[in-house]
Length: 271
Image (cartoon, rainbow, N blue to C red):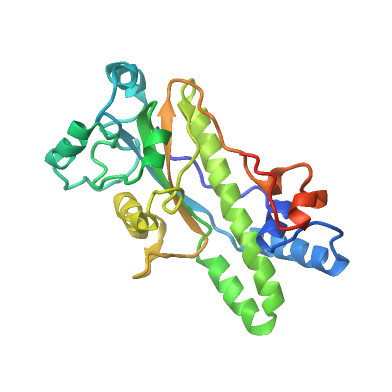
């Protein structure tokens, strides 16, 4: 399974407004113009890069996604690592996963660390393989925001919001390309450290497993934040049945600009 090209194709204005705290109503002309300017600057400065690895899921696997899924998904990867990727072999011994097997926990083989929390277990319950991936917009975005913050903080905030939207677009494109590559199998939603009860601290584990500093130039601060800042790590599962996808959020709703809930700082609760 080849690593898709990391692509930035669009910056969703509604999503940028969401990050800016927009709650509905008319958008002032000067703000609208600043957003369009920021979008153009982010598109120009971004140099998207991505990396991934594929792992088998066999620990605690039930018959419905055990031998059957292992056989059906076997063609998607080689030795649990994406083809054409120069990945370092994990030094973790299989014995580390023995306890997980006895508990029935669903853990990718050879990952090198335990995925914690029940939410990710639910995500992967029907999956025979998982994909760990990371994408980044590159250091040019950080430099753009830093330079602009010295001269116009308001513009810097708008650029930052547009960049946050941009990395989501890169993630969406990456997953769409993975889904096309995996067909006729199905991908789950992507799930990142900090989502649900998957601890943010596992960001370090994700980054180590993907060797992101060497492969895409992303480093970690002592607190676990990635640099460049507009970078994302995530896990997605591969299943042989269609998976339920979450609602993308307010920014993708047709009522975004006129929503009475948002004007009052509330949500309709749609999932």
